[in-house]
Amino acid sequence: MSKNAQGTLARHEGRDRMLNPAQTVVLVVDAQNAELQPEILMRHPEFADALEQRALPAMERLLKQARVRNVEIVYTVIEALTKDGRDRSLDHKLSNILVPRGSKLAGVIDRVAPLEDEMVLPKTSSGVFNSTSIDYVLRNLGVQNIIVCGFVTDQCVDMAVRDGADRGYYIVCAEDACAAYTNQRHENALQAFGGYCRVQKVDEVVATLNGG
Image (tube, rainbow, N blue to C red; front, side, top):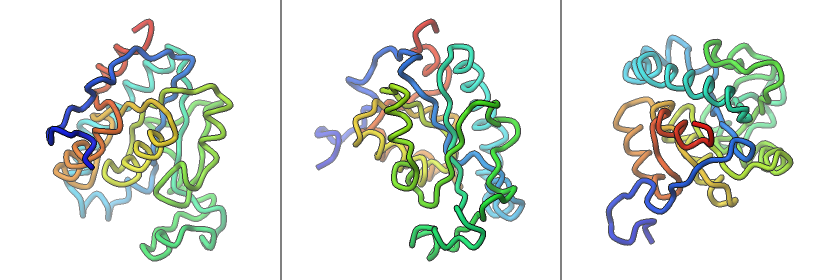
């Protein structure tokens, strides 16, 4: 059954509430150097443009405002636990996705890089809740709300939104701080998982943080 019985998308109907910074985390999904490889940017020009013109600037604003409000920030990156990637999920093996342990491609993009004491969780599947200890970590932090941003919207961001919602977290997607390989895929993903979260632009999200 569709998330919306009327057959139309209400992106955050019934989901509006203020976010307590002490119970909120910004989850930055796969904003890593692997996405800046020339072959990816050349193959996906809409993605390259979205990164430069919209997503990375919006992510910078979100991180700045989150830090001012003492909101926890957690990063996840695709990175194997081994050099040869033998620990990867079957899907990543079949898809030939390998970022070896310690590779520079696993590093977070400089302009949105973590500060000294912010956490970075390596994962070897699309879903951060499936191949990291993030649920355990968030429970330890007392987190109830997750603001999701990152790349790409219709894959790893989508998984984070749906899996987080299923685990009982209140999910907000900062849509302008996300991007997919085409603009259509980005918009389709927002439509598809909009029933699991509140979809807003960064400035709207920040306004719902207490003290905003």
